[in-house]
Length: 230
Image (cartoon, rainbow, N blue to C red; front, side):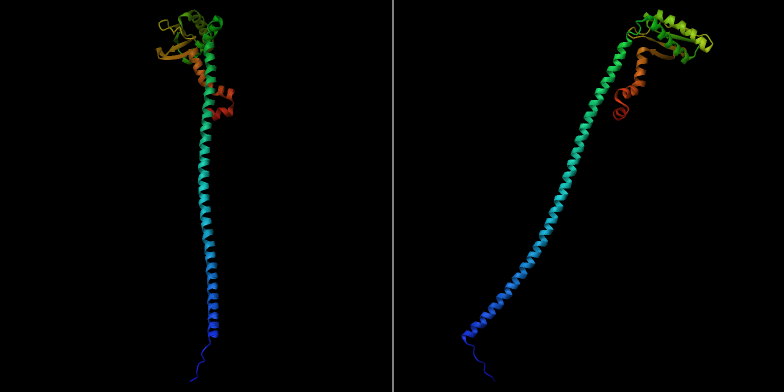
């Protein structure tokens, strides 16, 4: 058997230093690997968190933007409606004033007897043509009876010239029109069942209904009229 030579203290110390250096080197390399892997995982996690937070911020921003847009639309709509109502109110006021002025004017329409008689004749004649009967009655204000009688005679003559036959027309003195009316007549036919209201107030009311769209267009314009009144 061969004999092993015992190592000296210096040799043992040298071997220990080598082993220690090796172990330290291994530990440092392992630590570097762990650090690199930790840095990579940290970078990945950091990127993931950044993406998540970015997405969360984008969602929050989109939500806030939609809320702001909706709020802005509601505000605009509210202001537009308020403006529209004010415009409508102002325009309706102007139209009311216009037709009120017309009502004020017709209150003195019967002052000119000659002109008023011609108007009444036209109103009576219109009723005679519409009814086309042999006998009709005329309702009028009591103070207009004289003018109305003259107008009736002229209307009867024109009716005969146009239609070719006589017609009986008389004033219904039992049912006079209210003195508060501005003027005009009511033509009664059909045995008292048919009334054609040709008073000034009624004609103006019908005119107001028929002419209102045209008046609006004339005053405010065609496009504006459609936008605000249709």
